[in-house]
Image (cartoon, rainbow, N blue to C red):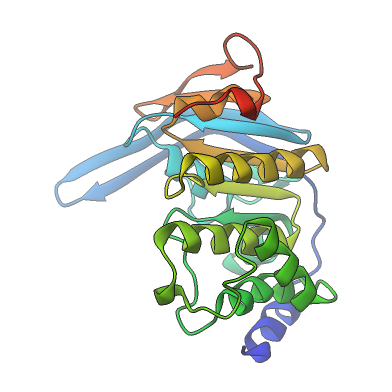
Length: 254
């Protein structure tokens, strides 16, 4: 594994405060596609100021991933304000955004984004190295064991199934130990049993004091959330606790 890359990422970032607060004020996002303008988000106001397990629910095209990218500072709004931990990042430099993202936000991408030339262990260790966590290799081994991949440490991504790659991506995100965890369809490639296992891991992160935001089209997942935000055509149409109250993972079916 290339330690020089991880060392450069750590050294190139200024010291910024960390926390779990997320603020979006009147956020809109529009994309120009040819002669057309596509509106992904409209007048989104979202505030999360304490550790919680939050599910953002909506069908394909509702703006879920765009919303996640706004929170994670991977994209910038056309209008409105995005702040993390009380710091307005809307007009900040790319370097400032990168620095705060590195110290505050962990991602579980729907497309995995694993390094093809690194083994499962090295992919996860990379996350811990960038976060400057001691004993990164031990953290990586433990993380892969927790997602059921203790016997696949030295396999490369092309040697793993889609579900296994998803679990490596989840282990890498957990290895960074950042206070905000963003997950885009984290159970989408997983069978039911493994999906429940991953949900329980994410719940543990929230219980440990992190803010966990999961975007999904699977309404069943929202039953175990502390808070459910529903999107439709780029707008928040509901925001509150799960209908009927919070359920146990053992009660889920899909």
